[in-house]
Length: 42
Image (tube, rainbow, N blue to C red; front, side, top):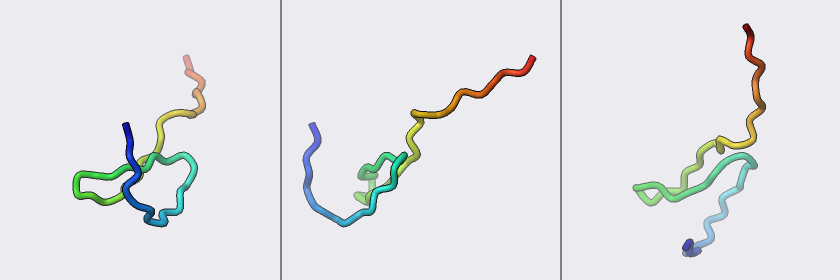
């Protein structure tokens, strides 16, 4: 279960996942969900 430890004032951008990395810094990664399907050509 997650626990809030501090408020740091990070401005969130929609479509990104925010997490604490190995160095203890706040990082973000583009979420993989919500992509549009592309048409396959034959």
